[in-house]
Image (cartoon, helix red, strand yellow):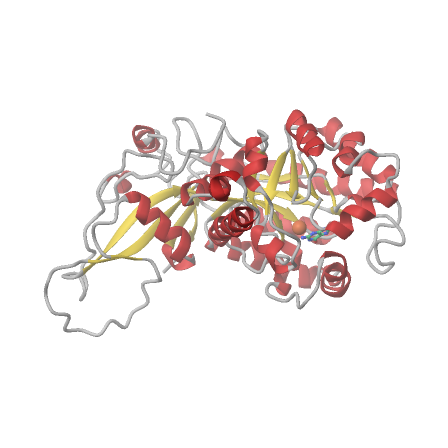
Length: 480
Ligand code: GUN
Ligand code: FE
């Protein structure tokens, strides 16, 4: 089905998960005691029992598999700035915080350090697929591709294009449209080469040899955003994406001053979306980050071209870009995924983005109710299941991966995470021990159905609950 599940309504998929064992994509040891359970499924088994230890009488663990998260928009290059944005809004944030940091990644040694940590943080948070922005520097961007490849993440790698004088700072800009395109091609070629070089592939987890060495890292055409590029650059990137059959990512309609700037820089175009459409940059493999202030006309062209939106609620609130009306995008038939947008967003976790998507939708609903909107804005609210849909399958659809990842179905890849939460059993006995370990913030007290368990994971969960992460059957993160 093409639309996210309604709140509480879940697709039954349990039988398909058993095929992952039968096909050897994961080991038989997972058949038991972990019961097959999935976020988008109704047919859910009972929890495994306690795991022994001193608390086993009163406390246990509940574990389940969920599809790996898909981060449709993250600037790996901005990772050192996470949490730092002061009072800024987009255009001064770029100048004050972002461009100085990104330009410093001309140094490959610094780039390696930053990207090593950025990718590790992403995997630790359960992200099995990430669409990354790097910087304008080819060598450093290729280091990001190498690191994602070595660590085993499914990744799209974007060398950032920004050639327009006056908008970009002279110290951090592509020299010309031609050099921007040539540098982008250098990264495209490098990423294609990664697939042929098997020497850097790490041993898999009992999987066949050919799957171990296949690269999951691909290049993505990345005009930073319309204002940062000349028409020549945008046209060249559109042609490149078409010729080499590449996905595209960029920003759209994030901030009202930015929208105004686009109108001034591209006076012949009908709208912000029309700028991208005109240069062949709106395709069914385009991911548009933010999309907060779109007109209905823009929504229509985005839907017609089959482009997707990366909803970045943490970033949108942090640099006060606005409240994205996600329900209206879904109602328009547009594919929506979630992005962390580090470091506009302060968190590398798509679980945090899912939580904030829910919270922002409630703030918007409250405003609509005050304005007397029919239904009191209730339809505007995103339920936890829907937020998790955006975090997984919604993102897969945006990135053209819907037949491979984002849910558990026969024939799909084992991109998954093992989630573990604490069960505080109500035994009626008096508690005699002081609890001193760190189980994380998700506590089940018995009697919670799966809807409540999922809601607790979304609202109270964090990296501590993500115990193991696999990409295409390879274990890429384990929390000790
Ligand atoms: N628009 C242009 N560049 C950026 C960026 O780095 N982050 C965000 N959030 N928006 C942008
Ligand atoms: Fe961004």
